[in-house]
Image (cartoon, rainbow, N blue to C red; front, side, top):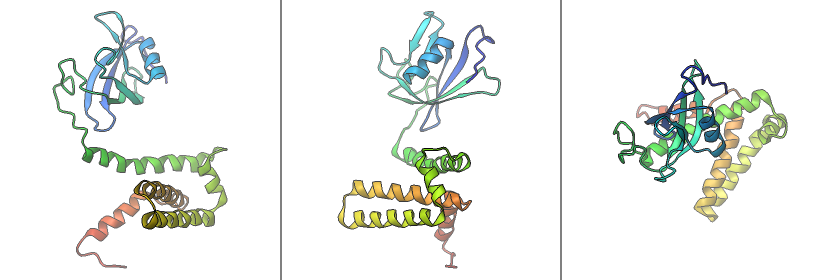
Length: 211
């Protein structure tokens, strides 16, 4: 990642956003050393302009910011850091430096978990385009449609076995395997997981009739 640290005399603004709720948490500044330490430790580290030194968020309070993703803007001089806060972000005890409430509730986490299915298919589509060696997903695409379809059936059977004779943990595990292989199959056919969601939403309509 190329970052223009020269534009503001060695510093770039770093906007921190909650990776789960999308709430903007705070704004800090990074120099090259702070950025490199952030990448190395996976904890947001700033350059303190008042103390003239590196400052890792939460080093005294424990309210750290664990990095999930770092994005650079179109001018390469402003960073967007998506992170998971370990507690209140502001020194006042507020969730954000603007005094807003940052609700990291179960409903929001559920929404983000569902959105991950789209992200997963994006990743699988990239595998389909690049076909890197040593990737299990690549091996499925190379094995062909019949094998991919067979894997969905095998995982569905294992799901049924766990549902009737297994544990809930194993049910979730096998269900995840089935979803993964189903998304691989959809990708091979040029289809998306969102199309299944749209079909289910259509069926939820009281006027829906079976084809």
